[in-house]
Length: 215
Image 1 (tube, rainbow, N blue to C red):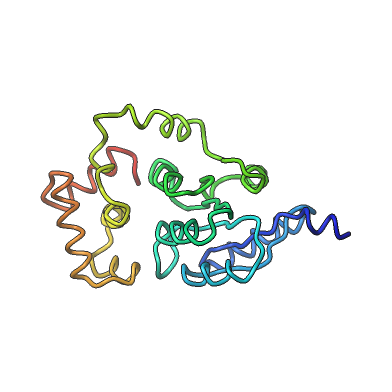
Image 2 (image 1 turned 30 degrees about the vertical axis):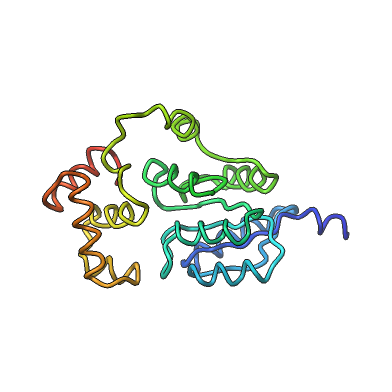
């Protein structure tokens, strides 16, 4: 029994939706080699609980209250570089996958993925591997050759986050509340986004996001 316990993949689930966390726990409870040791509901919660447990893997949502997913990931990798992080997000991979993998994530899956795909990814990442679709792997491999990058790839991580939220129709006030930032700060980000993308209105950002399938 001791050997079996040691061989288990010990997971922290970080997601602010209780029903989704419960669904994952139920799925993992059917597998003898995976154990959910704790749950976290926001960025600070994640960082605190990682310090409390001997974990094999963190399963991280990118849109929780408080600290943004990229901030949490970067801090996790700085403080606990040996703990792999698998991103499980509602956002399609062409929106965020490359950014998160470049920031240190070992894999990226959408919440639409099947349980079998999730289990495969968890096991692979826990063993030190990486998990990404062929499209994302190819993009990462040849990114250095891409001189004419799309405009949205010129944005910083925070700017891209704000851009994505503007593109979904959220107001600056709503974005500020979601990211725990002042409206003034969000407005500054919006100004820089428009400058970098050579645009003048939110409608142009929304059109660009639709055109490039970022929604």
